[in-house]
Length: 321
Ligand code: UDP
Ligand code: MG
Image (cartoon, rainbow, N blue to C red; front, side):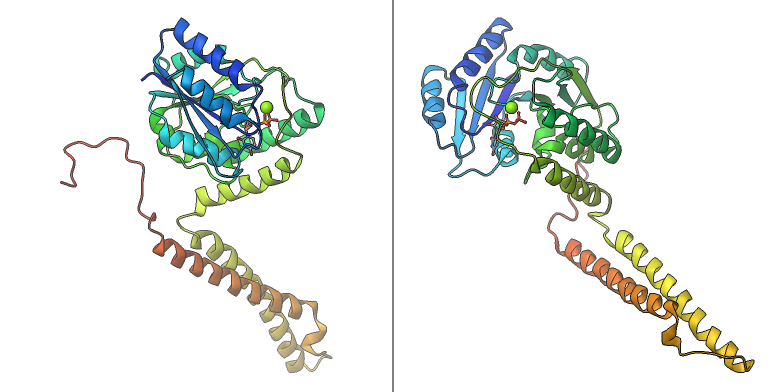
């Protein structure tokens, strides 16, 4: 099968028939074998009825529905687990992304050798309150992830080589950082394509402004887990030792200062009168705690069943057998 189209949807009943018809038209015009996987994320409107109806008419339509609303990431993740096509395309259900982009995205994966191609809504039809924070968000994501050529991390329209979606796990709200997840899994040929974007025709957006706060927190989590997830001691140990060292220097300065003053008969005060005494106290305690956090982190990693799971690209004369 050439293409799997994965579509997460939450209360998008009005858009679905139009979207399905448009995709089917593009697919048959280009002679692609395909499937459309609708993932109903616990919609409370008629969306699931519509999907069932579409599946009756078009055998290429598949679908699953969540019992309740879990979010876009879990929906994508379930779609990815089921996708059989050589190229997997994700798009939003609200008709903001155009199915006409599919042939070129497919070509970029199969002919140009990209692992992942992300859409770039260069000209957006969204309110300003969304586009400006998005620019900031993308600039940070570029810096932190080291993927410098992407302008639009969170574009719903993306294309993947099948093995990419099988080796990443999208959970929580991590769909904003799928290119970063792919990079961490070792897929570095990440490209971009300018795509057409339209204003929402039916329904309304499902994400509020809290997306930006959560987005930044998720970015920090990803950065931390990708860098230190398997060796937390390298982070906490370093920070802890540094803190402890500062405390030690401060405590020595206080102690020796007093001894020196006593020895030379000059005037001296109680050590508790010196700010360095408190600095020493706090940093030494903090340092020890950070160090212990590192140890606990290491213990957790040791007990994780995934501590020795790696992405193997190729193997010759399979050495395990
Ligand atoms: N979506 C979903 N679960 C949710 C929220 C959104 O499956 O909990 C889907 C939604 O139906 C749409 C896509 O994710 O197909 C993008 O959502 P939306 O268009 O609201 O986001 P925006 O375009 O405003 O960023
Ligand atoms: Mg949208």
